[in-house]
Amino acid sequence: MSRAVVLGGTGLIGRATARRLLAVGWDVTVVGRDSSRMPEDMAIAGARFVAADRAPAIGAGADLVVDCLCFTAAHARELLPLLDDVGSTVMISSKAVYVDAVGNHVNSAVAPSFDGPIRESQPTMAPRGDIDYRTRDGYGAGKVAAERVLLDSGYPVTVLRPSKVHGEGSVKPGEWVFVKRVADRREVLLLSRGGRGVDHPSAAVNVAALIETVAENPGRRVLNCADPDAPDALAISRTVAKHLGHRWEEVLLDDHAPAGLGRHPWDRLPGIRLDMTAAGRLGYRPVGDYATTVIAELDWLASTDRLPPAFDHEYFAPMLNYTAEDDYLATR
Image (cartoon, rainbow, N blue to C red; front, side, top):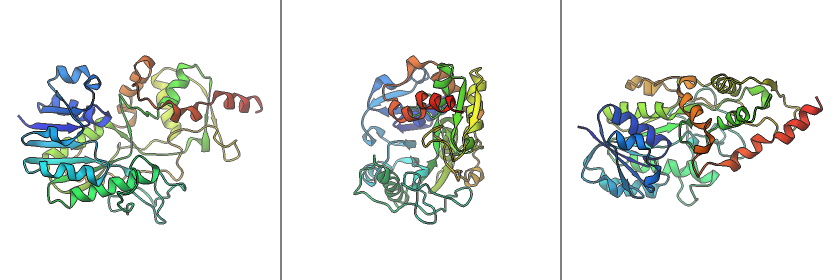
């Protein structure tokens, strides 16, 4: 039986990975800080939980190690001494590492403008370890530093760069801006910039599928990881409304609308899309497109009493400003 260790296994990508591997017969150890976050179905399926911050829980060898908690070069260096007996290692990075022709990235003050779908060869931020990785400038730079430590180690490490990850259990699920409106029976939906914004979604279950593919094909590489389609915000809002059986009037705002009105998590123009050619060449096949894979998250979000304690309500508050919306609609 193949053995996998998932660091950060109770998080969004970690859960999806553990479930997929368990379903095909892997022995899975889930590493996390809080056993209460271990989903019951994973325990029933045979996953073992180990309480630890990071890598020491790997133990004696593994066929696969998935590190969902590697944010800095220091984190990466902690992992290296344990990889001698590991068949394949996957580090979860982010599309936040990429920069456009003038150095802008997704967390910079000026939005980036990429010339078409982003390939793995796109330039990245400079690696840095002197900034807190939890800051806008430090996150991508810290990920790049961690990537380089692992890729330069000589071990078979695959770096995955997902985009906007969605799935059951997320603490910042973008779809909440639409699910909450359905729950509140809002009759009108306002979308900035005509709802044309695109920020390529990455289903956690699709990330897990690529991780399984990597486990079967160990090697040193960087791979993008996103859904097979990149719907714009209007299409996403319609997917949510249709699944939850709700209808609203769509008001597609232009650049003359009041600032901040109709904001949503996909509000990026030019849109951001990841090129998935390299993963396809490796043999990766996604579980499904966005509309198919988001259903589990929508059903979970519709049960608001089960939102995780770390759910980021402050992030969504400006996007759910009903007073500003109603004031605008009253003057149309």
